[in-house]
Amino acid sequence: MRLILAAGLGLLLACSPAPQGSSPSRGLNDALAQNATAPSVAKEVPQSQGQITLSFAPVVKQAAPAVVNIYTKKVVRRRTPFDDDPFFRQFFGDFFPEQNRTRIENSLGSGVIVDPAGVVVSNHHVVGGADEITVVLNDRREFTAEVIFSDEESDLAVLQLDAAAGLPSLELRNSDTLEVGDLVLAIGNPFGVGQTVTSGIISALARPGGARNRGRGYFIQTDAPINPGNSGGALVDMTGRLVGVNTAIVSRSGGSNGIGFAVPANLVARVIESANEGQTMLERPWLGLRGQSVTGELAEALGILVPRGILVDQLHPDSQFARAGLASGDILTAIEGEDVNSPRELAFRVATLGTGRSARVSYLRDGSTDEVVVDLQSAPDQPARAELTVEAGRLAGLTVSTINPAVIEERALPLSARGLLVTQVRGPARRAGLKPGDILMAVDGTEVAQSRDLPALITKPRMVLELQRGGKRGTIRVDG
Image (tube, rainbow, N blue to C red; front, side, top):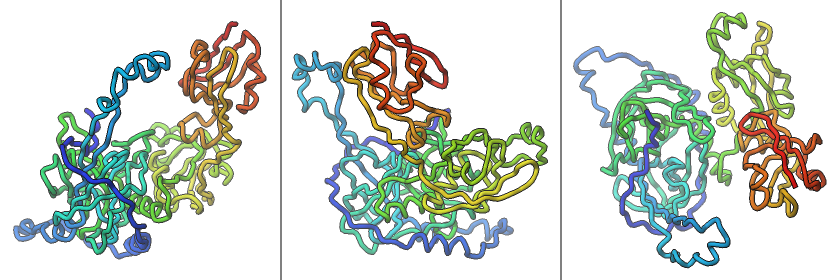
C-alpha cells in the first residue's frame, strides 16, 4: 500500500510566465464565523424511489465553475558527477554544456477559487517550485498565476490570478460541523481528462493518513473517487460549500480505491487569512510538548473509564503550555471546547487558531478536570543560533548552530536537545566522522552550549566529541 499525491501527471502544455498579481481581498473569516453559528440542517435517509432518484446537478452547477485546472512548468537542472567536486569541476565542468543539463517538467492539478478577485487555493505539491503557472477556468478562460503563499507542511498554496475580477467562488464551511456519513462531491481534473465530478460520503474525520513532511497531517477521509490530477480540487457539501481541499489517496495501483484525503476547510481558511496578511507560509503556534493518545490499556492504568485525550510525556521549559501550569502526566482533553485525542489533532487545532491569541485548554490531573489559558506563540528563536563554521584545525569545514526552541521545532529534534546542531560537514571535518543532523554536546567532557564556545574547545590535536545521533548517544575520537 502506498500514499499517492493526487496531482502530477506529466503533459506537454504551453504556459506563459506568471506576472505579479493583485492582493487578495478579505472577508472569508467573517463568512466562516457565520457558518459556524448557522443552524444545522436536518438530515434523513431517503424514504422513497423519488428521493433516491434526486440529482446532484444543482450542487454541481453551483460549485463547478469555481473549480479550475492548473498547468505548471518547471525547469529542472540535471546534476553531474562533478558538481560537488571543485577539482574535477575545474577540468571537466564544460564536458556537460549547460543547455544539455536542463529539462522541462510539466504537471497538472486542480484548484478552487475562494475570492472573486482571483484568489485560488491549491496544493503545495501542485504549484510549489513551478516557474510558470496557467489556470484554466471551467468556461475555458485562461489566466497566468503567481504563488503568493505556499506551505509544504499543510500541503496548501494560494495563487493570485493576473487581471482577474468577478470570478465565481466557493464559500467555506466550518469543517468542524461535518459528520461521518455526510454526502460530499469531489471536483477536479483527474488524469487530465477535464473537469470531473464524483460523489461519496465522509468516511472518517481526523485521519492522520496522507501526512506530509513531519507527519502533522489531520485529514478528512472520503470515498468519493479521487485520482491523480484531482489534487487541489474541491470537496463540497450538498449546499455547494467547500469543506476540504483534496490532497492524496491511498492506493496500490495508482488509481482510486475509495480512500482519499482532503485538508479541512478550517485550515484552508487559516491559510487564506495568512496570505491576506502578507505572509508567505503558515506560522504555527509552538506546542513544546510530547504526548501520546490515551489507549484502552493506558486508560485502565490511569483509572479512566473511557480512553480519551493526550497523555503529556514531556514539556520543554519554554513551552507556553508549561508556563500555563501544565505538567508531565496531565491528560489534555480539549482546546477551545474541541476534543483532542492525538498529538496530530492538537497540532491541527492550534494551527487553525494561529499565533498571537490565547486558547482554553481542558485537562485531567489526578482524576479531576481543570482548565488553563495558554498563549499561542511561535517557537522562540533565542538564544541566537549564531551559525559558525570552523576555519582551521582537524574540524575545519564543520558548521554548527546553537540549538534553541525554533531549531528544535524546525528540525524535529527531541525536546531535551541541548548543545550544537551540525548543519554542514566539509573538508577535514569529514574525516572526523561527523554528519549533518548530529547534536554536539561536549568536547573532552566540557559541555558546549553555544556555537561561540566551540573554537576555544577544539584547539587540541586529540579530542573526544560527545554527540547524539538518531536518538542515541556516543563519542567520536579525533586524533592529530
